[in-house]
Length: 462
Image 1: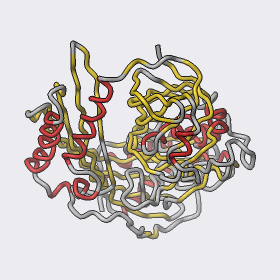
Image 2: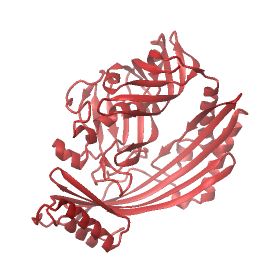
Image 3: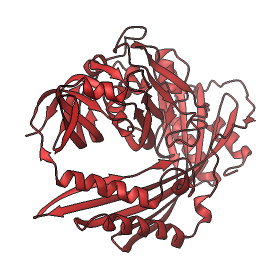
């Protein structure tokens, strides 16, 4: 154990000493490794250990956090005293409690632990990606690649008697390719990640497949025409296409926004907020998925949560503290980048569930519109639901057929509107990996969906 149980108890009791009604200690040690290359040259090798302690206390609807970057007794107790002094309500105390350890079920089989693999072997994979990307075409002027892995151990204990621990191993490979012609350049990328080890290259995508996909996208975009702006029906592909739900609607279903009424959906539970074909799920229990967790960062077991069912809003993603304000139990949704951040409700693996429409029917139903094969990043205002997303690979649809590639497209709209405008859902749900930033830092999340049709949306272009 990173810190012995006696010190954990002492820290919790110290944090409670001035009248808090709940105390929690979060202990973390994370090993973060990265290897990256540009073309045939390794340009960075890094290995970082992040370790420390976060302590929180509650008093009603007040919450105070304090941290320590060292795990010795003096540092841990100093953080506990800082949290207690910020509450400073009274000398009343909670009844004595006893810590009881809970062992969690681990659903994530790790076959090749990254920390047991040499830097050279990781570098070989990275260089292989660069080599295959450059081989794809003489137009590929540059290729870069990386492999990152995280081995994170956490301990969570609180004044309700919980003591639990979890080890979280994740790996991610990434390749980016640049296609150049006549002074113009376009890029493509591919970056699969899983809660697994180096077996990612055997079970998910090989180094060659990752590189060739990145190069393929770049080559498509170098030949693409600029899209004309307008209002179109749009088909958005599966996988990372799900980022449009994640950003435009998912954040508005987190208690971080809902508890303070800073969400357009805060008072809509039980009401119809989407088309009948839309069922949206956040599921942190998928084995080896990038965003999966055995427990959240408050020690609550992960759950599969049906957020929207056939268009009806069923529930929110809730952490312990915001659950107090909402009078709801935690849904296992509290997440934090590290001990240095205060946890709050966040997504895990969030996706629109598969529907009943065939891909052929979806495409053929569009007379003139846009097929978004790959989505990029974007931004959203969770209060209003207004969003803007880049499309990294797109094609025009004409007379029910996918035709020529286009570039420079962005999708602009409002979350509450797009939920109703999604009127067809395909059968082939897939996920894509990303890092989600919010008030509790950057965390790994999966997004996903089948091919969907949006009846109409504003497309930004030229």
